[in-house]
Each structure stands twice: as C-alpha cells, then as structure tokens.
Length: 284
Length: 161
Image (tube, rainbow over all chains, first blue to last red):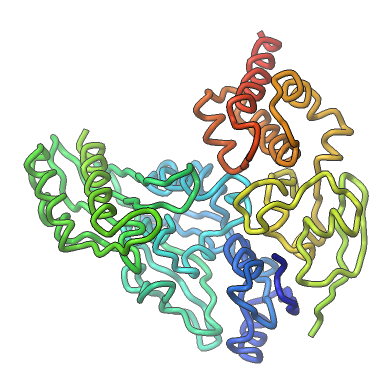
C-alpha cells in the first residue's frame, strides 16, 4: 500500500528539530533511515501529519573511540557498524549481530538510533545495548540526558523517550581484555525478525565464565537480561551441569509470548538451545 | 506545511527535478514520474526485494525510501546498470541457467547479485544464499539463481588467474 499524505521537513540543526517537534507534538514523527517507519506508514499502521527528517542535522553519524568508551552516532547505519574496524576490535558483539539485521539493502539505510527508538523486542541492537550496558544519549529542548539501555525499555514498543526527544548517540563501555561475545538468533529466513535470539558476553578464563551477560531477543516485551541464568554460571567452570543450570534458570527470566512462530513453551525451549550454544562459544 | 517538495535526483547519471509529494516512494517516482519501470513494486514493506535500486552506490529498497529523501543523491536503476554493461555477465548467466520464469523478481535479483559480485567476489554458495535472502522469487525457486551467481563469481576468479 501507499503511505497516507503527510508533510515533510528536513531541519539543519537540533534546535530546528525541537521547534518543529514542539509545534506539532504527537502529529510529528522523526525520520532517520526510515526502514521501519516507512513500512509502517505503507501499511497505514501510523499516520503522522509531519515527518521530520533528521538526517540533515550534522554530527549525528560516526563511530569514535574515546578512552574506554565507543560512541556511535544515532544516524550511523547498520552497515557502517558491520564493517567498522573499530567495532570489530572493541565491540565484536555488534559486528556479530549486524549481519542478522534484515538484509544488505536495508542495513545500508537503517540506523542504530532508529532501531533503538522503535523499541522492537525482536530487534538486535536493543539486546546488544542491554548486554553491553550501553548508555543512550538523548537531546531535548530542555537539555541532554543519558539513560542506561537497561532502563530505556519500558514495555512493548515503549521506551523512555518523550515527544521532542532525539537520540543523538549511544555510548558503549569497552569490555576489555579477556571478554568474549557471541550473537545467535533463530529466524525462518536469514534476515527476518528473530523468533528468539541472544546477545552474549562474558569474561572467559580457563573455561570459567564471569561477568556473563545474556540479553535475549524476542523473549518478552522488551530485550531481557537473563539475570537468573547469568547468576547460575557466574564463576563456574563451564560444563554440561553449569549449562543445564543456566538453561533451567531461563524459566525465571523469560516470558515469551506465543505467535505464528511458536508457543511460549517452544520459544523458551529455543531460548535454552541458544543459551547453551552461546555459553559453549564463550567458553571455547 | 509543505506536502510537496522540489526534489532533484540524479537518475542513471541524468539529473531530474520535479515537485514531488512527500509521501511518494522513490520507487514510484522512478516508475511513474521518470518512466523507468524496470524496477518492480512487490510487497511495499521491504520484504521482497523487487524494488532494489542503488542510492549513492549502495543497494537499498525503493519502497522504503521517499523520493524526497533521495534529494541531491545519485540513484541507479536496473536500466542504468543494464545499459552500462555492468550486469552483462549476470544477465547472461541468469539466461543460461534459466534463473527466471515470470521475471518479476529478476531486476531486484540482478541488483542484489551485482552488489554481491562487486563486494564479495570470494563468496561461497552459502554466502550467496545468505546475501540473496532479501530477495523473494515465487516461481523459479532459488537453485538456478544461486547457480547463476556462483558461475559469475567462478568465471571472475578464473579471469583473474
């Protein structure tokens, strides 16, 4: 289908974005890469009166390393993250996750900030940000604020963003030496939204995992940090028993909803399978 | 507020300036305004890949971009890449392998396959499948398409040796 009629503006500064957003309130939507927004407009799931294209605002794209933090601008495309040498070196989890995001033609246009703001629990970046304990930088007319990714997601497609807020960047602490990561997901077709996925990170030494983070995709209304499973393997030598304990603990962490892809029980099972694979990869 | 915007897009090397409705997809601009109907419209929500085009040298979905978002940018379509000869090897291989029946998906397939040929000349058969997973074919099936792409990659490797 075709999108309903709307107006379009391409401001050249954040101040202009704030002014437009304030004037039009809930009738305005921010447009970045548009890879989700345009699909929802085409399907008439949303009908804003105005699209504010923020790609004309300078300084919102790019990857920079500052000390122990990698800062990724909100307008950085999935593809740029996928192919960045800085990301491969400092945040390999993101490089591992990127190829799972839709298809090349979509990764060339879609952006990190857009994906985070949309808040789809089946998307890859939100879970990665939760696993890596990233901080989301938000600009508003009232000033800039920072929110931890772990506190950013409030419910299904609900985030800490209010009207007039613009995600400008995401700051990732560099995990440092000894950490290993893995990103795994199950989808019917490569590039489709995940049925279940996991972003996994841990410090690995001599087959023992510590500071493990398991953030699940598609296993609840938001990306979910599986704290019980993480506690079950903390500091343990990773063998069949520890993996089974983590898999069992997932029942306390995850609450997947049933859909065309499977029942809640099927999805919990699949999450356990991925959990086992991810832990094995981290410890190997 | 403006619901139409003056927009200039360089289409296959030629600048085209029109006043476009903000809601108009780039693919509709190319097909209906410019008259380049080689790129097709399938699902209109980014799933099928029939509308794959190049924007500033990178493949994108023509249905997930507004014409106005391409203002000031370079867009290349199947017509441009076909006329320039860039697709000749793939077109020949698709023909020889019977990698199309109705042909609806073929322009998008060729645009995606050429991107693969250009950026991943060493791709394995699995990588070809994964790369082409964003393009649906509903009649030929993918086997012949993957065969055709694989042959072009093999021939290119042979030519370099």
